[in-house]
Image (cartoon, rainbow, N blue to C red; front, side):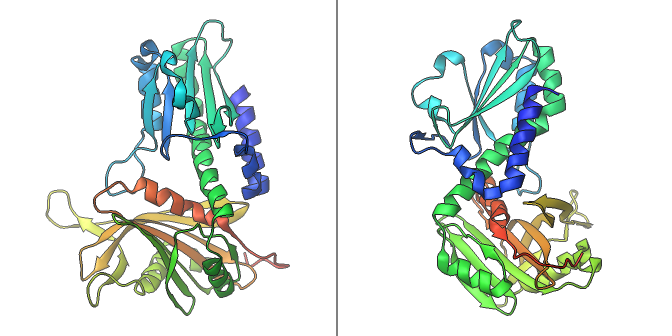
Length: 348
């Protein structure tokens, strides 16, 4: 197995085993703070490689459009410089990918380092004997490369929430749903009712929001796509829109491209495992009934074995003028800040 694969397997195993507790591996009190924006990658690559098929392969990988967003947004914003320009504040960038093509290299591999010149920083060195070897390596391991960068960004969100969270809101959610959670600073409670809590972080140009809800678990039928969408719409009605009588709904159909007729629009539905627990992830779009407002959402649903209830945290973004990625990503990380009490018996 290639060195990067071994390193990646170890990193993923460590993250799975200890969850948020391994944040110290990405931080250091003795390091300078990182530079650069969230989901920004500084690629150090000379012109010959960057203008070749290898550069195109790297761009295709890192700038792949994110699924289920209202407009085309890449996984990462890529900033490319040459090795001669890598100095001053650039060495403190949060995500660095160094590309080295040399006949002195025996095989293609990626080596990960953390907190080299700043914290919490990840520095990846991608080396290969030839451009073709590098391209073939990316074809096989590109998804793992993206995953490591995404984990680094996620861990920064988690580390912030561990230090700066809203205790009052944490306690309200914990009491309502019999869970433990740490909601990052900035979110405020908007509404609370039976089996339902809504909170949001309001910006001048956007809104990050989430709502949690629960209902009795009645077997696997409680976790089907149709049932989850129906329950989402049932609870989303409690989130009011900007005008009287308006409320949030799930987009389930869109106009055809030719403007004639209506096409079905289903949220993406897939099982995922987060911190060792099974969840159902749904991604789609929300709209407002009786008004004009909408955006993307992502929800995570599981069974609380202690209460024998289905629990969902549903996260949404409203950002009509600006990109949605950097508002939605931190919301996706909230599920990693949730834990459930131990139960002697399982419901599934």
